[in-house]
Image (cartoon, rainbow, N blue to C red):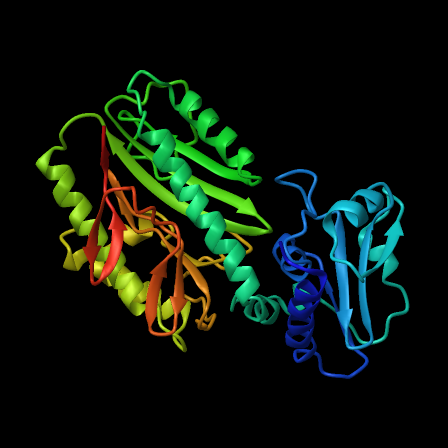
Length: 353
């Protein structure tokens, strides 16, 4: 467990990153997004609904460091979530959090400097990374455990329920659990249904703990694979290799997207396949922070996490990885899951049960 002094040291570095963005010594920034607030508060659970806005915000400057929450949430946050040493102010439950921001000189809002704030949290600090590595490893192991007992007679909802329960038992939030059984493998975002999973399935999971989100996709099959499935899997891993190979410090997300997208045609997929689904991007305190698009100029940083997810009909690969110097280090690869090595990096393949 982190000590108070360790957490304070992390927060001091985060505060310095934010203050370096402010134009005047007496200015401050109001953090209001789930990603930014969870980042600054070292992964505090600042939500009550998985899809709702934060129940707290943070005002940060050289002369101020203050959490603002709703009055009905303050006791719980102070007792169970907030790092020690932070000033906590409240507003009535029926008032906007920003109603506390009155007569503050030089105030800037996160929404007006979103790219800069996003860049400030991109490079993970050692204690953040340790928490993230543990979550990623535990989530990957959880899928291995559950899918080893895969049954074609289960429904997609039943499998999703089992995996979701396992994520909650890890102390994490199942922010995404999607299942595509054998009859629904063409869908890229397959919300689970009552359809049986059949002899082949794709499982997509995003698990959040300490504000950080582990992203991964796994495939499972009953019996021996068809040769065309193996070939399609090999080719999609080659596309992913182009994305991973292009993910280097000092480049931009749109540059990586262009190189990865070009790899579809090079590996006998339709050249426009990348247009049929998003390709992933940076990871961390949001599922994609941000998602890469043709004009996403965010600069890649060392110690930044990524989750690229190239896909084609019946094929997809996705893991959370870290850019560690000149190397890509997978965080969600379980050594007990079958894998192949692509450009020196272990990559998951279909589990046969």
